Image (cartoon, rainbow, N blue to C red):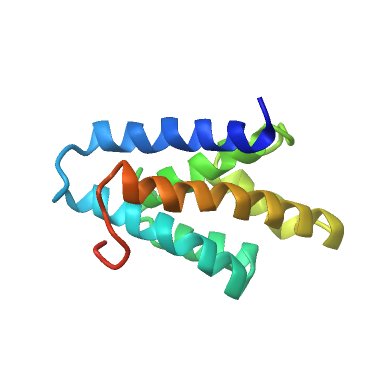
Length: 134
């Protein structure tokens, strides 16, 4: 299995879990997850990985488990394959903040490649078109 297939399979598994946890195409949480997943690649490109991750993290409310923290955890699971220190969204943010330039660029490429899958799959599997999110 290629690395791209691994990214796609993990993203598909995560997006289907969101679909099961938040049934119904009109579900607010489902729409919020899809909307942020679709925005994430653009955020990473325009603001940089660290700022993009912290923007998503800032959308979590009172440290509860939200769809935004789930998205960060999903991305962290993607990157854990190559760095066991990344265990969840919080540790992903910490690793990115502390990375030297070469590692930061590598993490950015990996995160962007994975984020593209979440963006695509959130449209097809969650039934949320761009701009329809909460």
